[in-house]
Amino acid sequence: MTDVMAPAPPRPPQDDPEALIEEARRRARRRRLAYGAAVALALGGVAVALVVVLRGNGSSATSVPPGFQWVKAKGRVAHLRVELSPTKISSIDLATGAAQPAVTTIEGWYDPKTYLFRDVLRIDGRVQIDLVGHAQCVVGKPFCIKPPYFSTLQGAPRWPLDPKLGREVGTGVFRGKRVVWVEPLLSGHRIPGGAVPERWGLDARTHRPIVSQDRALWPDGHIRLSVQTVFTPLGSLPARTVGFAVPEGGAPRGSVPPEPEEAVNSRAASLDAARTAVGRTALWLGPTFRGHRLRGIRIGTDGIRAKTGRTLLPARFVSFDYGVVELKEFGAARPFWALHGPAAGRLLFDNNARASLARGGLLAVMTPGTPGGSESISLDRTLALAVARALRPVS
Image 1 (spheres, rainbow, N blue to C red):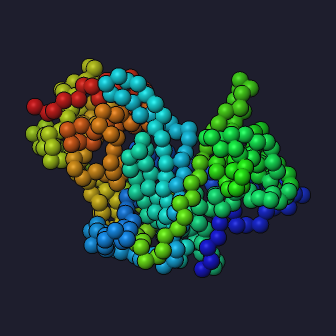
Image 2 (spheres, one colour):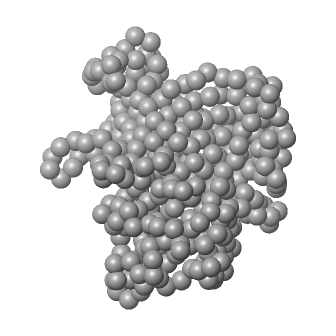
Image 3 (spheres, rainbow, N blue to C red):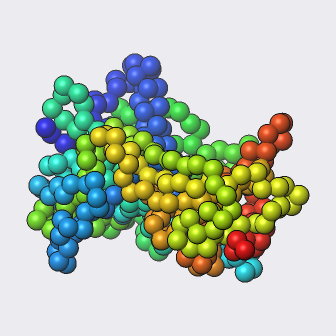
């Protein structure tokens, strides 16, 4: 097979408006998938947590977890890091309540010979997700599509500019570097689909693509940044130094990032059983929290289901349902969607959907509850901090 960049199909002719519109939609979908998936998965999306083992420092295939097989790279492995902003995730100081945007980065490796890739998502400097997948391959066709963000970078405007593919729209400074701003074009025309076009920042000296920006016109008339992706190519690695841990039955294909089936098994439990179900003394909010009684306790495992049906990387958990909020706690074995969790003393807060903190050797994850009836519950910062400060060991 031949490896190609994502925008491989020929550019539509300018006299075919439907083709132009579809091209614009395709570009928008690509950006939304690449950015949205990373952030949505940051605190709990469905994705397989795997490991790429670099053998250059003495590591070996024996490092592969149970249920995985060692696959050596066959070609030079491309290496890239991207930073995504703005994100909806905040890092909050539990002592003061002060919040700051959580820096979100993805470090990726891609082997064009095996079509395997690895994505490592870091939030606030800590690894949350470690993914291995198989590039999208077209059935019956002799090519596969590079994973983001490799294909996105490959599709960036190149210097000197082809007037059919891009035009210079200004100069400026980005993070201390002089840049030339370039707007991508389709057959010499602006890409339809928005009032404010996408633009790329190229290093003014080397013309290397540095940043891609999507901006939007807000109702107040101001143009604001919608999605920004900063690219840092990290060169490549020889095949002999890299291998991938692939789950039995094969790595997930087709979606970005990989989305295998999640395997969650649980059962109702007593408070006594829950107390040490994960190897640490569990934390709870007492029999009631803000007038909401504890409705149920469950213990179980959270992992991924391989294509063979086997559950891989199971992590034991205990959960406490208070109606207004649900707590799910893990011990030393962390779930595949939050490998390291937040740093001590920090709360990772994901836009009213999820929050997590580490305490006493536990990872505690809180999500909005389901009290029933017509009551609508959201996990805002005030509630998340209140829960974090009210946690105490089960006595």
